[in-house]
Image (cartoon, rainbow, N blue to C red; front, side):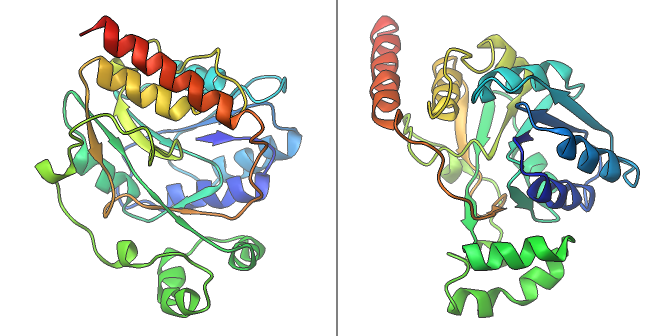
Length: 257
């Protein structure tokens, strides 16, 4: 779980994980240099959780999400990795659904449901995460425009070949909700640590997994996370990052043709 200096959101995210129906997993917080308030939140949740929680931290030296993600992968003891951001809340069957979709030589990329700034403030002010209560108000919140979609919270679809991507499609990849086998992540040397800031490191990771022969599956209509509103981070390097990624993809595809 990636986080940086938003302890209120992180606390709710952790609470949504310790409320999972499937409890056979560990939590690793990949902390890109947050202050003491984040550790305080983690310690408080840890004291009331039967699920193992590890806090992997590095000094704040700009956005180095790729580096701390690799440290978290190294610290993991499980053989399957589910990536989540600390500003996302998990449905109670999030781990259960990811486990159902897990398959050798496959990875999963899921999607997210967006909350408005208003609803995000309400959710955070409660300081508790009750998915049943949240779900009971989704029609009202959809009508008011405070949530962008709700069907995925009501309908879950099973596995099948329809989930398999036929080719690499770098859009619709969300680093806040994806999963792969640890051995596959290690085989491609994890995330590219030369990618810093707004660098589409998640798309790069997915492409290199596919290039390594891993089949990408869609986790939509099964694993959706609920994304809290926040201002978009600095995207000044967005265009350059996209062009760099496209060039990298082109070179790798040509070299294997």
